[in-house]
Length: 328
Image (cartoon, rainbow, N blue to C red; front, side, top):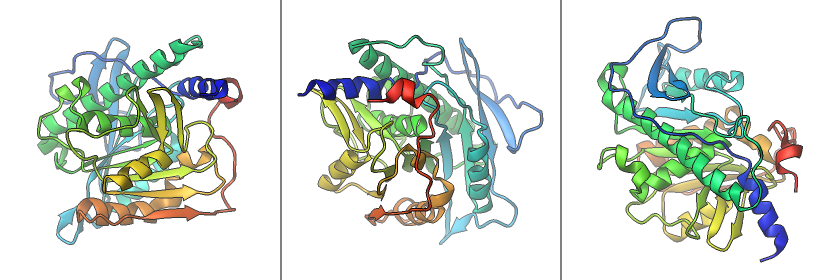
């Protein structure tokens, strides 16, 4: 293994946020009033760092909630921001939430703990340890939010068997990792009911961290997964960055694994684009609609592997401090 590969891995590992766990609240949902575009806001967990909130955007009046006799799923979304910044109310995300609500979806946008915020940059193998910890803290918060939805499904008008994880960049990594931990029934997933599965996963420039070589789904197949990524992404690797058994496996590598095992997935590759694709939700509305209806709601293994050249997309990294954190 070339030394550069290790340096690349450590640089990649420093690109992500960490969260960390505390007991979930057993109290009834706590609504928070105030000016916000969401239809409702709740405290979904209480941590030592403060309350974690979720915003819910319900389908707009007159929207098509049912498709061929089936209800559109709830989208549980985790924002991006390199695990150092961002929140559930990023303006560009809210535009997408409202559009999905107009199309008949319920959207849940969550806050999570920013484990890298204000953290002094680790070096060497400490980067790997910090990154591993950070991802799994985010996974804990996603699972806490999921549990909140499950426990309050009737009051929140949510089908507990119809929840799709979605995320951008750091949020996409977290969504993919959460489904990976759930499908392997690791200790992280023990907080969720034994029979629970996500209905699907939508990843905008995501990846999975494995400390055991190539990702393997041992207990159950992954949820139907839509991977959307730029082929020249230097923030979240499109292919893989690996050092012995420690690896960061991006959309291209995951698609190869999914294809080999005949899993339900699709991938959209933006040729020549970088991490700006993490913010391409509005550009991919029809791709998402088709995948959700065909692969998730109807359960078809409609495998799409599309390479798109889109010269109209402005190339450039959308992450703050890229030069400082990720430059090779």
